[in-house]
Length: 115
Length: 111
Image (cartoon, rainbow over all chains, first blue to last red; front, top):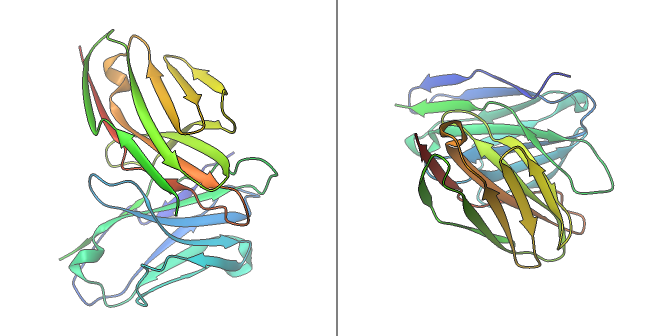
């Protein structure tokens, strides 16, 4: 059973460029999450999918951020017109729909540095 | 709004010196409380899920407990390899399945 896979692991980009991250969840996990984490902080929720439907999006999320999950499998997170404040680790997580507590499992993260 | 506060922010222990990390939470109907371990530059690694007050779970030198207001992660006779940041998260009941995380406790265990 492979874990959550994220690509690329590291990305350095110039301010104003667009970047895209990909996440492949654990097989058969129907819920997929994106979080952002900066140094010394806990993961901060960005958005959440159940199958292909984007059910929630953080109020703090800029319009420059967009996420998709076509066919309910992998997901992409795109950041347009990157700013230095976007530098962070972007974490993807997935979980399986159950009746009990919804444990989410994280990937290794994608580091973004905007210069 | 769900809130999670972890203390202390940082903890230094000598190898073998047992201690506890605290996670205080405010949530509307707890669905689950989660503990994760995070090594530098890596994603959080799942440790435990607790569902109701009084529940306890153990894994090697770690033991997690839960009350109606807080959770403790007890570390017994820690080793240097236990050094990491430990994250706590809560998930409320109802239709939302989004865990809210605390800022974590950075643990360093000296040999």
